[in-house]
Image (tube, rainbow, N blue to C red):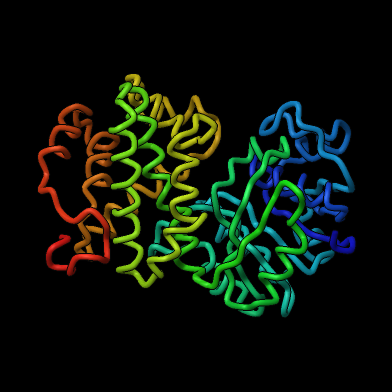
Length: 343
């Protein structure tokens, strides 16, 4: 067990709460920031974040606060679990609070709309004096808070960042592996949300196990093809942040993106499904951005295109599935056949 430290978690949603709980149980003092004063008061008095983690008691020295600058100033390591839509504005508005050499780790699996920026790129742009990293993997918050066995990946160029995060978070039920491919790990975490929506649809339609396996595997081929064209390492997709996270979110109704897909598959409109969820399903936003980006750089992504037609163009689900099945049967595994054959 690492010696006790002050650590800051920004974002009072489900994953921020899960990380605060791990850190608190590991003996650290957690400065847990959220926007909502009422939510902070509730956690202070009941030790429970009722909206996001009902019934889960937060043990240890967890200090909820709405003072972001104060929370950031107290720690050498800051974890950021803020939805992608608000990520830049929160970091930019409080950039003065971060100091030289401070470690700032993104927990957010999403992409910023303007310029197709990942969260690590936003950190580099807004607080370049800090050392940054990304945490991603098959990490369903609902399982982590119940101390179920989980592994994750810390990706950072700086070995000290990787080591610090491993020391802070590692425990008997939460293993932290390391990677240097920040872009690949982060892109894998964002892209898999799209395929989790596809998997939810497939489950609602009661497709068989063969079909589900096909969708997950073709999803992996598609997301790795896209990511490698943008500079990611293909091997990253064989690890926890790639295939691991894809399996977890595509086979579990604990996944928010899966649940949105399931609701749409059962006949709900997208807005209705998202509203019913009451939390952010990042895949809805990511889908739009990846569809635009893949078109602009000429990457073949039939599942992305098909899901986009279903969610945003009111295409019939069965028509899209039929057209996917009629598409040209190309290479099974990316990067084995020459690029000209796999298109």
